[in-house]
Amino acid sequence: MSARPEATTSGAVYKRPLPFVRRSSDRRIEVFSPKLGRRLSLTSYAAWQLWIALEANPAASMFCERPAVVEGEPRRTIDFWVRFNRQGADEFWLLDDSDDPADEAEAPEADVGSVPQSFPEHVRGTALRLIPRRNLLAWSTPIANWAQLVPYLVTWRRFADPLLAQSIIVYLGQLRTLDDILARFNEHDGAMTEAALYSLVANGRVVSADLATLPLNGSTRFRRA
Image (cartoon, rainbow, N blue to C red; front, side, top):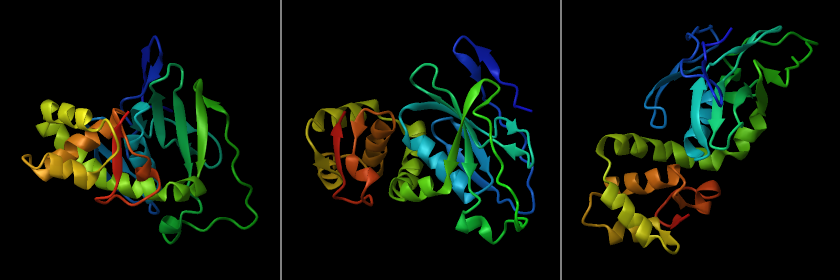
């Protein structure tokens, strides 16, 4: 079962998710994706973390939640189909969140002595990537930072100021802190300056190594790519 992908010369494109079928152990987390320009319904906190990681990755050009299922026992819904900028790099992402402490209290108890499910390397010709929960723990700092950035990206979709964005790129010929940037462009609303800056980070035109290792604050440094 899949969400009827569109066939293109570069491979299948998944744009419509499978219907949201909520089990008693599932949450429903509603979000708006600035990268896709539409709402998503996610079934766990771990899936929300994966979505943030996709919004944060400039190399991920497209994605779709719940694109298809992996047959087996138990039957699993794939969390995301992802298309990267490099050709031929489409992947299905399947989240192994069985040890997610946020969901543990609501999840049904596993059968004693049950055998872990094995997964194929490809589904419908697309590589299947299994993402363990420990990976998300390692991404906790950048995910927390990008959770703060995403609302600014939503604002930027509606009120983009290309001249402001270009001026920021020119200014970032060397490392500058967030406080430096806000002070330099203080004639603009601070929230819009941040929205312009973070939109440039999202599309890869500005980079910040600090976002991967340190909490976002006025000392976070940025430079043009």
